[in-house]
Structure formats: C-alpha cells, structure tokens
Amino acid sequence: MNKGPDQQVSHFRPHPWHGLEIGPDPPEVLNAFIEITPFDLMKYEVDKVSGYLRVDRPQRSSAQHPTLYGFIPRTYCAEHVRRLAPAAKRGDGDPLDICVVSERAIMRNEIIVRARVVGGLQMIDAGEADDKIIAVLDNDHVWGTARNLADIPDVFVERLQHYFLTYKMVPGRHTPARVTRVYSRNHALKVVRAAIADYEENFGA
Image (cartoon, rainbow, N blue to C red; front, side):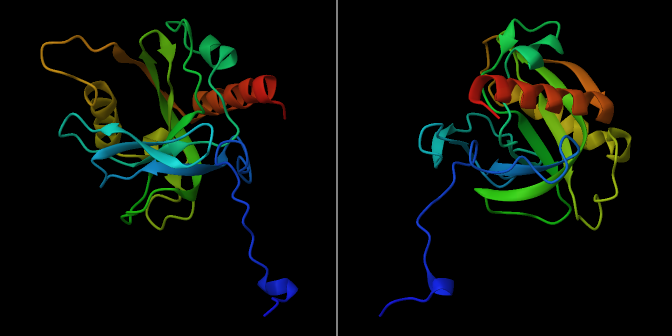
C-alpha cells in the first residue's frame, strides 16, 4: 500500500555534530547532544565519521558523571578557543563539551536537550584546551531560572571538577589534566563564540 505525503518515512539521519542546529539563541541558549548520562558506567562518544554513538571505553574509576554530558553541534575547539586558555598549546580538535544540570533524572543518551549557558571550566588536558561549558536545562522547573554560575550550588561545580580531574586517574600514574579556571557566564559566552568561529573556519558556516 502506498503511503500518503504525511506518512512518508524519512531515512535521513543528520550527523549530530554537523547536521543539527547549534540552538535557538547562541551563544546563550544552545542545543546539546547528550552522549553520557549520570547513570552510564561506559564512556560513549559520537563517531566523527558516521555520527552514531560508539563505546569509547569503560569508565576506569568508580566515578559517575554528575550531570548530562555531551557537545554543542557546529562548534570546534581550535585556535580561537586556545587563545582564551593561555596555558594551552592547541585546541583539542573536538566539538565544545557541555555539562547540563537537570533536576529530573534523564536516563537516555543520544538525545538533544535545550541548554542555557551559565559558566564553565577551563580544562587543560595534555596541553590541549578542553573547556567544559556548564549549562542548565532551559525549561527545568528548578534550575531553569539560573542565569549565572552563582545560581548553581558550589557542590555541583566541585563535583564536576573532581570528576574531570579523576575519571582518567590511575593509581601511581600522573594525570595530565588540570582545571586552570572556573568561569562565569560572560567568559563562557566568549568560549562558545570562539568555538563557533573555529567551526566556521574549519568546516564552513
């Protein structure tokens, strides 16, 4: 049986990095593609060629991510991002990472959430700028009114710092990752703009 126009099935799946919109009001309100939830004990990440989620590695430590974690579509960490991180030698060559605080538990990954930027962590990993933008779920009934990092309890930021400084840690070995700065909304917006500029220069608008 032939299907009508309103019943046609689309087999096209946009690449989550290159094919999704960056968001309704960048650099403040963005789309975040979620790769990892606080319930995941595996590290998942988007395969850059296919756009499908793949297993990167099992989490080595017992730490679990404090928030939803993913990236902002159509961003890239290269020279513009590096300039905002004086201790970095280069950008990490990935889309810009984002951590999204949600009051209700979200247990699924490979979803899109709308996020409002409130701050971030300037992380240097093996000499690479690897910033982590901190955001809240935009229409969240508890966190949705947050506009700056000061609106988020300090313990959330402490947990994020602890996670990113320890999730690769192996006893007896040096870890190359460090957080050199915790920044509020104004600097976070600069980092997002820089990542958008890096994407446009490297991949086209």
